[in-house]
Image (tube, rainbow, N blue to C red; front, top):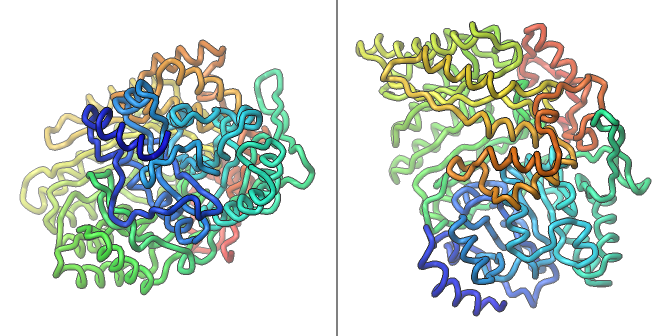
Amino acid sequence: MRPDMLAAILETELLPHVQKPGRYIGGELNRTVKDHTALDVTLALAFPDVYEVGMSHLGFKILYEIVNSLDWACAERAFAPWPDMDERMRERGVPLHTLETFTLLSDFDLVGFSLQYELCATNVLHMLDLAGIPRTAEERLERGGPIILAGGPGAFSCEALAPYLDAVVLGDGEVVIVEILKKMREAKRDADVTRSSSARRAFLHAAAVSVGGVYVPQFYDVTYEVSGAVRSIERAFDDLPLPIERTVVADLDAAPYPTAPIVPLINVVHDRAVVEVMRGCTQGCRFCQAGIIYRPVRERRLETLLDQGHKILASTGLEELSLASLSTGDYSRIRELVTTLANELKADATSIALPSLRIDTYSVELAEQVARIKRTGITFAPETGSERLRAVINKSVHDNELLEAATEAYRRGWNLIKLYFMIGLPTETDEDLDAIAVLIDRVSNARRAHDGRRGAVNVAVSCFVPKAHTPFQWLGFRPLEEFSEKIRYLRERVRSKAIKLRFHDPKQSYLEAVFSRGDRRLASVVAEAVRLGARFDDWSEHFRFERWLQAFSGVDVNPNAYAHRAFALDAMLPWDHLSPRVDKAYLLAELDRARRGEFTPDCRREGCRLCGSVCDV
């Protein structure tokens, strides 16, 4: 279908009948449009969620900027259509296409998926189907089709999607993407990689061998014990890496960064300009996968951040600037950065967002700096109610620090405090749940010292999921009945009208545990769930747990064996061949310290902890 025909069908037959047609029309400010006939390589960046989510993702914008800076390649965008649009496209026979030129995904050399969340797996298959691209790497080898890439944090536990992917990029995409495109350009000079099986395999082999951080699942064979445990992971060729190690951008200042990002046509989840102040975190929370897979910490210079921030605001007209990282409060020059930006942006009424701060009065002082322009709620994440359990998860926060910070926030004019907790953590007891209720109440009452009234507190409670490549990866997910009881228990103990409790659905967390800890045998479950209609499973209005149970039953896979199993400490894990460059011995040592309730100090403050990450990359 030609782009002009497709555009006409969209305008007359599809867009008038769907919610938010702005998701599908393209034409945004700062987009890049190139003539494909003048290019050597084409890449479609596919985000397996709705436009509003994908357009808020920084990594997506960075790759778009890098590829389109090349005069011989292009990157265009595609997102998962909302079900109303998806159904009409299928009825009318309109394949999935990009927003820039309305080119079909099936006509690109490469299609790259960003794996951000386990429950987006069904959307990956939906998008391949809607694009008319054969689902599996094996089918594409026989029938042809674009090379299907994947990256993002989900790459480190991607085995449930392994049969559907040609190659997976581990680590920082800035390091890898141009090298992959160069390999594709070289390969295309000799053969049509998308149609020749031999050329396809040769390209994938070259990428796996010579481009760091590239995992080609079809070149690795997994065998299993009778018990279901992984017996071995073997490579097909001796020159392939095993394990495959993630790539790392050594110098963020030298790395490309989008200072004229696309301005969405509709409101998106994070409708603001973003500068990434640093990458990585060394606080060492034992539940946090991001804290492992993004090591080591790398900071951008203050001057770089100021320059990038002003350029982005000027090129987009956005009215808020977010200082993004896993722990923005740990940036070494954070006070100077915030003070300078607050002074420089005040005249234009541009606000500043600090998405992640430590729990202390210093963070409240920083928040006060940005609140001179716009005051919103202030957020703290104690994670647990008791200091004992915080020692288990290595969250170095004391109750008095949280209460002092809350008191100071109320004193400085905040009316709302947001708190984040987790339930179902290792060693958790009813006393720890009681401590959550008590701590929430004390935070609300901290306002009384200021004006005699209770403070408003919004509380979000998530279910702990043991993630791959963390010290808790050997542990299992708690039974669903336990989570239901914990939620009931907390609701009974938190009664104040000033406090609002919100709980993440334990059933969604259960599936997250299954797929984040799973192996390739789960691929058939994903396909069966798609057949039964599963999609947008990370959206509560579309999530149907019963459908997933039917999918597991239909392919004779026991999900409890994945969610609840505790791995032996010497067992081969399904993700052992995918290395975040942190030693397994370090994770085991951290698990042991967790069981003893011992803190591990932040290595940026108290010396190297010998995690294995290369800090001088």
